[in-house]
Image (cartoon, rainbow, N blue to C red; front, side, top):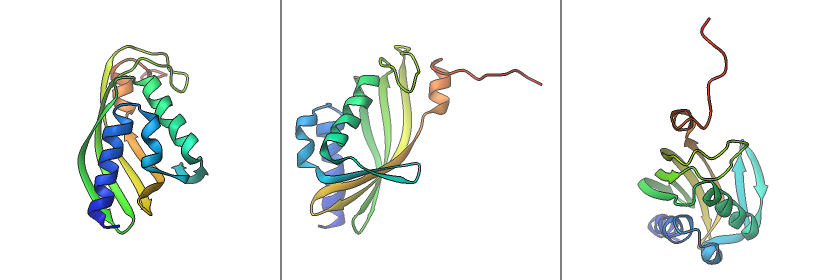
Length: 143
């Protein structure tokens, strides 16, 4: 597959699955051996794990919309810089919902093989935004 095909595949995945929460479409984009990379560790989660990931994210941010700001591709790899917007309505890692809108940026890195996403990793710049909406607080005081 060409790098343009791979970049377009990621854009369509974001538009048709991530931005809608329609996990019924996930098999069009994700391979059965789909692997998530988290903190340097590989977790083979398959299609069901990919569905759980999307459902979990959309439970926290039910109106989540990602915008693709930039994509860079080389070979089987696509790096996508995104801006995400959504309302914090669901519990996430012990953080109670604030019902406030949040905007954050991030980078997703995917590997495409045989026309499907086989690996996903990345990072989101969300710490400041969670502080700003009061979802988390700084503990301690000035010394």
